[in-house]
Image (cartoon, rainbow, N blue to C red; front, side):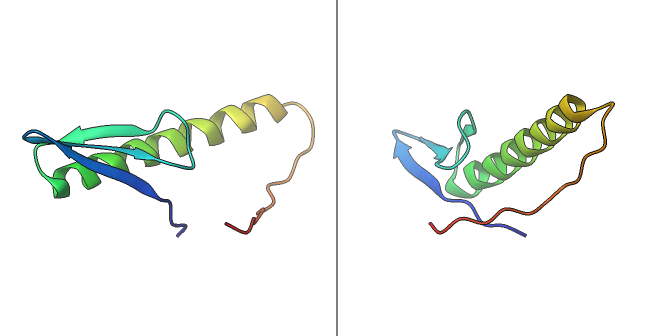
Length: 72
């Protein structure tokens, strides 16, 4: 399991948030807990779609999946 950083903010009665490391992963919720749950779901979906797109781009030729780490 890998961790990501969410920027969360309460605006009025809503909570909004963005995942710093993945563009386009953002959400909202009526509570902080709902927001975090929604962000997890959005992040899981984005990572899965990116994985599918990357594998499709390599289709037809041999490829390997390699873990890459960076220092934060």
